[in-house]
Length: 376
Image 1: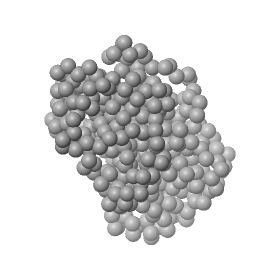
Image 2: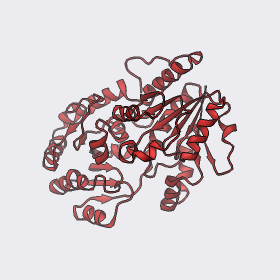
Image 3: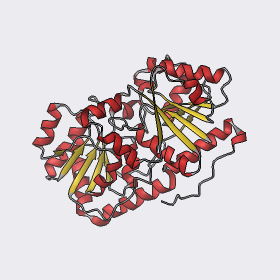
Image 4: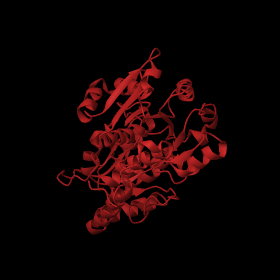
């Protein structure tokens, strides 16, 4: 089958975590023998910022790391009608320009033979609902929402004809344990500043515990303002700036623990929504400690797969325990890996997507039916 993904960017993951998941999904589709292609706008905010920050080197590096992924760039004169004409499934991400969202929907309504899906992986449906309400989704066959709370929001608002939950997951062909890599640090956090959506939490659950315990700590990410960089420096934390997602498994392998600090809109408005870093960290076999969030969908086993800290003081206590008790840390690693391999790989998500597609296009057949555990 032929799959076409309209994404904000596949090439750039600069402040753009959705690229991680779509890369993994496309790689799995290709591995199964399907055709998959991504289209991204020529003025992609993420790619332009990546080039401004790092130059064109990361673009070439993407081609080396992901040689099996096909990506096209479109501008104002691009022929979208021709692009979608031979696709079986077209998936349009919610950061796509609203006029183009509507245009692709009109192509579908006017006789397009492809199935059309809208993919939402953000909190704008609850924090900037007018942005989503203005989108014309009348031509879309279904909506893929990345958590149950978001699905319920779409249903309540009447956005889209069918809405299904499609969680993100780890690309386990990339995110895997690397026991051969030597440990050079204690704690690593890979995350962006986030427009003050978690600034206080970063200080409480990362900076202060690292300072108090005198941990060898590294932070990687973008959009850190001057005061934040000063706070990291004062706590003895090394700030390394942007890190390509393909290099993240090695960064995890070089450290003894990592933390998850969710953005406030997800905790408050979309409960049960972890970032993709939770899936990726657990897939890499690194002990994970998290600031509070409610796993209302039962995706993981809090306290078994990872540890939850209620406040900064408890985070410091749990970090001390993980770093001083190797057997305890090993139990966390094994449990987290088991859950990822059993439920949360991109192979699982592709299987789910194929079954969703088959429910709309029975002639295409269902998914391949994964076994209880995916070999990685």
